[in-house]
Image (cartoon, rainbow, N blue to C red; front, top):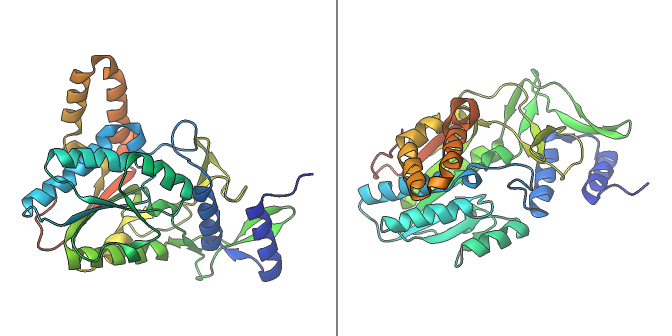
Length: 326
């Protein structure tokens, strides 16, 4: 029998030495290994995000930022910032759209994965990478995009008495222990608070897109995806993507000193930003791709696909204009 993978062995040893570990630790360890060791996106990976479905998503995100920048006085110093930028696809599309509006910010990417940094470098020459928000520029306006980032941050799960759910090693497998009454992500709230404070101090805005709900989280939403199918989140740690529904009401409440807009359903936001108009323009330019473009439009915006489950939230500096689409 071959030895277990290094992360699995490390977690087994830790549980043997310390006892069951919190679900939040399990999720943090598993995702850190997962994203550091692979490109998980696209048909050959485990899942597909909106920027990989169509250029329209990134373009509309870029136009949203450019429109707000224009209406807020075209400030000279501006930085494009993306948290968890994947392959750099969204940033490339957004920056192209911004350039058409006369906005050419420098690029800062918050990314820890060496594999993904390499992919991003190919699309975004001149980008500056950061391990976290602490080293982002402290002056100049921040134009921030956060797409499918918060869902991968660790969650704490607790029962009705406040006891934290844990993961144990029993009978030759990892096993969750305890019921789930509530679910929260302190890591997400800390990042939302930090990001909002920076925007309040420096000016700018953040566009946050993810899947989740706009009411306080109750129950278990932890899930795993492998090869575009749901999988057991307590098997093969570090070999599948772990996510949980984002609590948008909690993110909004964590914001400090900024205007909070939304959340609104992704489909409604994209429609308000002109998704159908952009799809029609692309189809006119490439008639042979009309069906493909329409399929992508529906996948992004239809309520039965990404349009309802995915939400859009925005933070903007109080002295900036109100953002479009909300």
